[in-house]
Length: 433
Ligand code: GLV
Ligand code: MN
Ligand code: MN
Image (cartoon, rainbow, N blue to C red; front, side, top):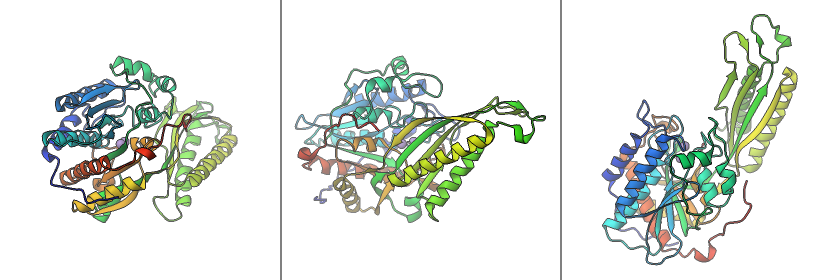
């Protein structure tokens, strides 16, 4: 694809950074981050703010039945839009860039086009998708999954969160159960700007990542039932200690990941991120433990091997301790490979704008991995200081934020001119994994 397309058009960096800072004040937490768990009052306030910005810029704003919000600027033709965007929900300890950057840079792109009177061929759409994080309502990427037809609307609306709340009820409560249909229209192409959330770009002194794909994700909830008993009187060999089994699983996950990584630090990752013990008291053997396991690998076969090893260890340990373990899959997505043409366009644009660039896979999950099921898709990464994310300390230097948004702008313009239409993949019924 021709990558000689950049011109003098640039986004307004101050405006982008002002909006990032203002959005971070919605659901503020100590350390400068935000807590906007999906479909909470804080999420609603963030949605209201970003929706108001969409309207101010002159976009026509629609809300679909799973609460995805899409602002569209018309193109010369009334065809499928070039789409960008990300999410504005956060984990409980969210930083100010994860997701927000992609949405606000999308707004910045359309505002730049608007102010400079640039007419695109396709409409340009900026989306923020519901519940990308999946921290309150698993799976992650829920809104974009429903948008592409990977999960039926009714099943999504019935999902119960970690606090017992239900997606459909919470959507209605915050006023974001919209009427635009799901699945939504298939875009001409989709590109998402995101902070890397890992250490690679910073370590290598590179400004732009042209993302080649996203690793596979496997989330499981384990409920371990033993017997609570007196901590002083119960001999060790007579215990059915759910807390011990949970701890053994957490330790085994670390060994499993290190062994499978074969000396490399990044091949297989494994995390026990949530652990609740009951009754959670100093002098009582825990009778109940609920924990989550997050396994990720870029190779589907290796990810399955990790899942099989986890299952083997859980069964063996449960039998030895005399506890039962119930398993529930919270999310399971295979690794995704992005469209070469989009990856090359991102890399070409970055080079032409004078930035250092490398191709790289994503360790984190993203809405782009869902859009990749239906249209040519790619992502742009910018560096994360110290590789820190899902933490209020998340930070990306202003110059890198601006560089990423300019790469996004010119990538979208290049894709506007690309002839993908004959090849655009169609939604495949039942591709619900
Ligand atoms: C979701 O964003 C994840 O990667 O956990
Ligand atoms: Mn994100
Ligand atoms: Mn995140």
